[in-house]
Image (cartoon, rainbow, N blue to C red; front, top):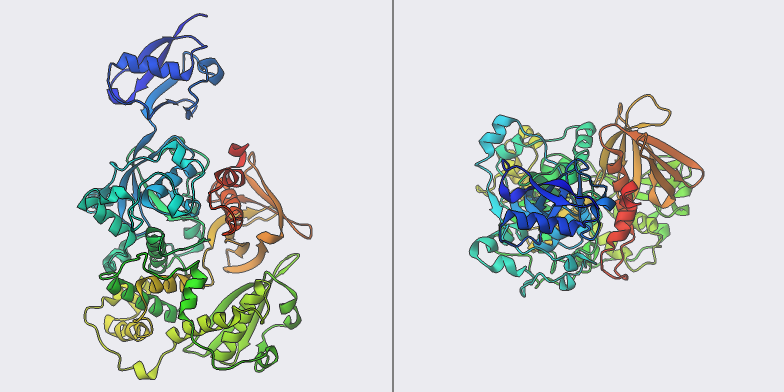
Length: 616
């Protein structure tokens, strides 16, 4: 077979160095090409992490036994021998920047698994990477030396064997050694690395008001949709998506379905989840009432205080998940009551009274203001053509607590006889108690050290002076001052998850047959169609009524079929339709997780549901 010259650049030789020319034949395998290149460099080092990158095709050549002919490589190919693991700057949810080595050759989902293994974060399927907002050059240069970067590039890399069948259980999460407190042994190597792990697992001090004011804040659903257009493709490698060595990416919880939270094992995961929720509140990424903002501020204040002396350690009571953790706050009920008694004083604000108890799977959301004595429950009831909206209005807190608990159980297919009913009522009453303005607390203690404008969003920074905010925050603080750090963080997350718009990721789309753009909201259990002009929900479709969905990659259109011969189709305006496809498939994957099942992450199933044509 005739030989021919192949040009291969070698990263170690420098950017200015000309490509090496090696003589090859078409039946030479990729491993042989690498061997020839390494020998010609005359550099003695460990080359085991290196692989060939094909520039024109934008793909890695990772099968060493494949021949050049099988790969389709000819003399005009431009190849580069480069490390598969490269440094990357990763901005965590608490806004700390880590510099660490990550895999640039595997599908991005696989890379995220490696990051989570290193940082001791279970359930990596809930997180992903996205591009940051583009910064102005002057600001970029000015802030370059201000933001500290924590370098952990010396950390060991998970081996390929470790990455196969990644377990979500901390005690079987691979070969990265851990200490008794579940901290990866690497972080105990020096005071510097130990400080990094503490920074990841302990809540950070409240940010300065000026910091909050300067940060990018999405003010409309269009702005929020632009954020969601920056998610990376989980099926393709970082290098395939234009990510270069030392680039900056954001590391965030993408899917708002948090499975199996365990404070004993999830110090970093729980802290980073709290930080992401906190910044969502402070940057007004999610709407909340004024009362809720004061409660969030009080919880932040308490977390900041107890974080100085307390940590998320394994001495916390065993808690199976978020719901059981919050049951620790229960208060003994004083009386028994029947379903008939609950009907007294209840009024429906629409004509759909009879349909409430005929459906399971309805969506339940609170609409409450203790200050104005407004106690309403918003129900979204599944219908063949979408979701029907029903409002219930209660006369007082007692009725609201009982009916809200009953509706939540009914949406799960449970009755009032279920053992969790009383616990649900008490949890709701506990939340109302935190919002209640007590006259006995009007002379609440003052704390000159509280920086109120660091605890509320810019809207309330402008609306109120610190001396007006301090007593209100401290009044709410009296109700949470006795909570442990773990319970306070869990309470913050519970209230965040109870907000009406929690977990909605927005996209601007154009529905088939329509002439105007609309908003598609994607949540963990439903899709929502929103009129962009009036900002109102038009339709809601639940995943459990979905029969199938597919994407026409040629015209970039998503088509979904629901029960009752309901079909919708739309094109994506602000994002690649692959991102929407991943969101839907990802949430369906999240719904397959169960404590009864093996806790090994089914990476193949995730890829099948989210990969699109790459998965074929």
